[in-house]
Amino acid sequence: MSKVLLKYIPESALPLVNVWYREYDFHLRISKSRKSKFGDFRPAFQGKPNRISVNGDLNQYHFLITLTHEIAHVACWSKYRAKVNPHGVEWKSIYSQMLKQVMAVVEFPEDVKKSLMKHLDRPKASSCSDPDLFKVLKRYNAPSNTIFLEELELGEHFVLHETRVFSKGKKRRTRYECIELKSQKVYLVSGHAEIERIARNS
Image (cartoon, rainbow, N blue to C red; front, side):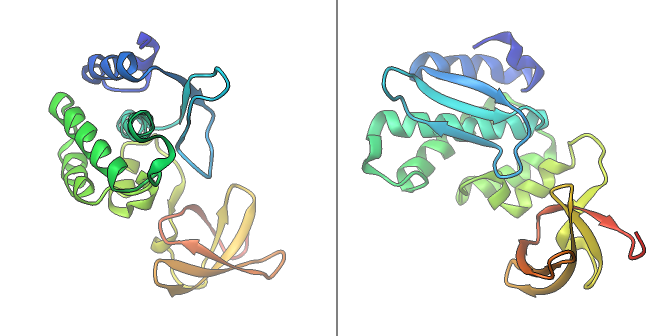
């Protein structure tokens, strides 16, 4: 795997990623920021190799965890093809084993390490699906004006996806009923969605 990856992951992880690259044979693309996902996997098809993409704006810990997540999909596909669910028990077992290998060679900050230990017990479809891990990883992002929706008070206004303005409503389990001010439509928004708070008179 190219040393270009050193820009995105801790140096101590590079030898392990190289081993995975030789074993599973995949093409990695560094993607622009995507709001809907941090990474994805596409199996080999019509002569094209297994393909992985990871958002290039992730901090080094988040990038490495997402990369491990996607390589686990390659490994799971190589072993089971389409016979198992994409995030089923087989993938979870492979992903957990790979994360343990990562944790053995990378010195994560204590808060990330603690959160990863919990994540290992019940791996999610993505780090974003694991609120505790997602919040901890966010601490290592470059400074920004974003916060989590759950941190706002009821009725406060916020910007989602840089353009749409909402008012925060009541909670339904893990999501909040939020009114888009322009259309007056109600949307359910995750409590750990990254949003930008705005003043009422903005």
